[in-house]
Length: 175
Image 1 (cartoon, rainbow, N blue to C red):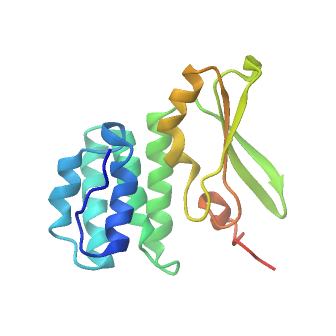
Image 2 (cartoon, rainbow, N blue to C red):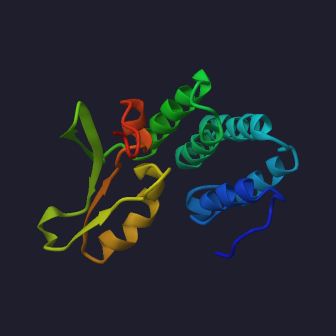
């Protein structure tokens, strides 16, 4: 996968490439290119990604829809109610596309750290995956299959300031 130059805006370009980097499992490249011509600011970013997420959902392309809802959520300000709606839609699509995942809530502070457990726990090899800064663990699920095939047990987790922890008001570097 090569880095695609879709937008003049560096941030828009980088975020679109987060999806494109996962290839066909995460998106239809032509869908992203089709909306790119209509995106001029964060509001049109939200609208266009939401639109293709809804199309993918209707077509039961749940993983594509998950990534698209994630991108719709990404540029919204925290005070927008749509931000949480898009997050919940992303989670719903992830669950529809991956119904047999072992999920855990590890107690932490006044809430929990969300974790996903994949592959055989008896493999003797465990790989911890934490995406950092603004990622969600669901984004990394597609790449885990390569490690599972290689015999690893995978634990994905989010820290403060990411995904579900943000919804529990746990912010990164909170005092």
